[in-house]
Image (cartoon, rainbow, N blue to C red; front, side):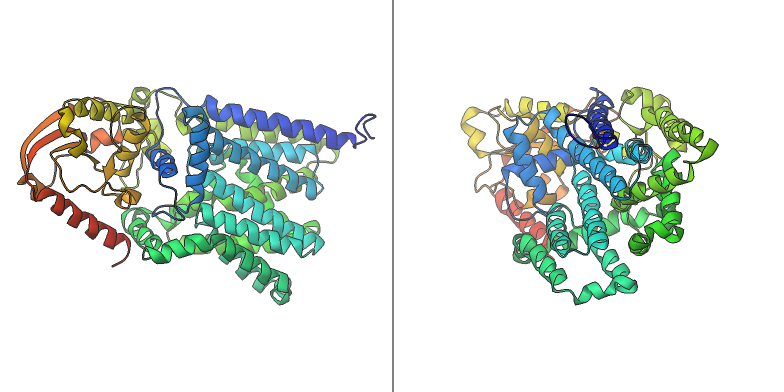
Length: 522
């Protein structure tokens, strides 16, 4: 049947309304699970500060995040807009999954099933943070969408679009390169290997290279800091990752919806209707093997799953369509929603920090208290990274007020790490205080060098011994009160230093050059 006004088939119209409803629910949900007790995450402050230092590359991420941050700045730079974009990218990913189900001739039940699994999974937790991850997953899903279109239609334009998506994806996060490697290997091992004789594939590669060329040039000019960043990540964080845990976490990511992922694998291997797309299970296998070998963090592979949710939902719908089995549909929906609803308070920053600390056992059983150092703490690491930042910014502002006005042009504001520096620059914007510096992450290239320094306002711990001898007078002007924040546990406070040696600027410049050279691999 067709609608009498739009002329569209009724099931398409119903599907469109359902999709719109899920997008609205998704956007509302992402804000509903954010308690006002929490601030932004340490990484979010760095990413937002990139808008003040636009470039073709950065130490920690490619440049797309910086331009997204510039847009956030134009919109007001407030909490709503910071959180809006990861939620939006999650909603767009869900819409792509919905269209994939439609392409596979799935009905409204398969679409609802796929959307619910996406919503009631670890994806929603990732979509609360302003990090490159949400757009990364969207880019992976878009690349799979282009691959599906090409496998079905054999139209060469989709090879060109694959190049566009890959280029934009790399400008957001280098992680998508691992998908490209897995996809290239799977296509080469399948019956689709003749694609390597298609000139449009190489044209698409050329498009991707043109898109990422500015970032490649930046990396070469700065000594390929991405290599140092990967080495540092491997030595400080990935060394604590277990390969077995990585594999086990893949299904835990979906909780009650894991059966849909399993159904996708079975369907892609055995279902004749999925035969044109069978290479996708090869892409999944090769990429997972690569990540396992590299001891990757569990969420690095998250972008592999949206396409599997589409296939799994369609396969599951076909199984439970005939006779009495159709009445089991509500059971499968409940199996997805109920476990997720029971765990919302531990997956998301809904509970107050003190409440989480009191119920630490529940969080520990789920492995949520383990930080990147391999140890268990009072709060999940992401939650502890959302506390204490405004307090530090206020301490810096109050300490700055104690500097004589005539000496303020010769006062250095320095922090121990990028989270502190980014938070100070975010919360102190509009106050008469200079931008904060740090000899950490991207701030090593943004550092405001000074030939004359009369005062130092420091946020963090006491200076190292080599600098103490150049400081005549030092006073601690602030102590953190938020005992559950990550910065409190590292001993962060506020310090005012004066009677400085004239040798101090040169010593700081030397330390800064050494740090820059490390990032440049020299």
